[in-house]
Structure formats: structure tokens, C-alpha cells
Image (cartoon, rainbow, N blue to C red):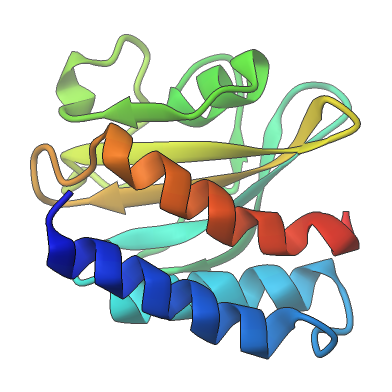
Length: 154
């Protein structure tokens, strides 16, 4: 990751920490704050938001920024793959991902971070970009760190 992006992630984390820790009244407020700040501060994001893992295994849209989202994801897709595996997934070209769900046909790349409670995914952070290869494995650790701000609310 270039130094500029790493520094931006560090600033975003510090800003979010000051906005969320001891200040957010609940999970939804904290998620909405994360989505808004990430979307505003990371210029390569075209969609930034969360999906809740439902008891039946579907994903239901939560707070987000960007174009209208798929409200329910079921059966396939990057977000469901990350929720099932419990591992982050980086997709440099969504056209190459089997079963990709194109909520926005302009999306070219994606990163999904599952957020766990007691070893099970309960929410996923989903970020799309209209640029190919906008994300790499180097984006995973800073986004996991940012997502960890939700832990007290899960």
C-alpha cells in the first residue's frame, strides 16, 4: 500500500474512534458513522456499507453510502462468500468472481470484511469501487481495525 493510503486509513481510524467510542448510542449509529466517514474520505469507494447476517443465512442491507443497494443477498456473491468463510475477501475484478451479484453494474472491484461475534459472522463491511483492482490484501488490516470499533455494540 502506498504511504498516502496508509496515512489516510490511520487518520480515518482516529477520526472514527473519536466519533464512536463512548459516543455512539448503538450498533446502527456506529455503522452509519463508519460508512459515512469511509465513503467520504476514501475517493476510490463507490459504495460503502454493511450487511447483517440473518438467521437463515441471507444478508440484509444495513447503513450504507452510495447508489441504491441490493436489500437482500442470498445464495451467492462476494458478501455471502465472506460471511460463510468468516474471512475477508478481496476481488480485483468482480467479473471474474463466480456468482458475483451486480447490485450496481458499474462496480469493478470489491472488498468484504466479515465482523465476528463469538466466532460467527454477524455483519459484513462491503466496499465497492468502479475501478479495477482498487483494493488489495494491504487494505484488509486497516479495514479490520476500523471494523473492530463495532465490537462493543455487537
